Image (cartoon, rainbow, N blue to C red; front, top):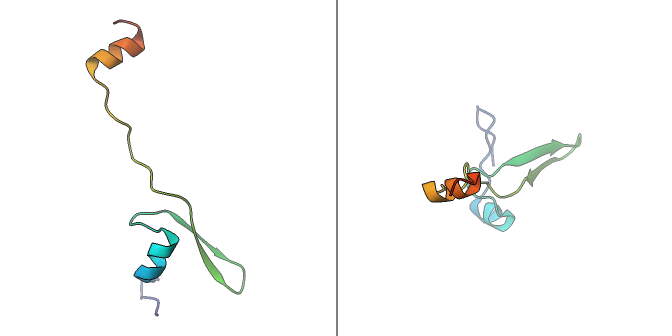
Length: 64
């Protein structure tokens, strides 16, 4: 395995699968002076929740 000129490393598919790393997963990279460690920060979260209907919005606002 090599580091690209841009400092990128490709994590092999089998390791990504075992670690549960999906595309766009957030990770943390630690260096203890001797070893580099990649730590998943959790599953990607959706950018926004479900949309509400006008009736649901009125009910939430108390104007139903």
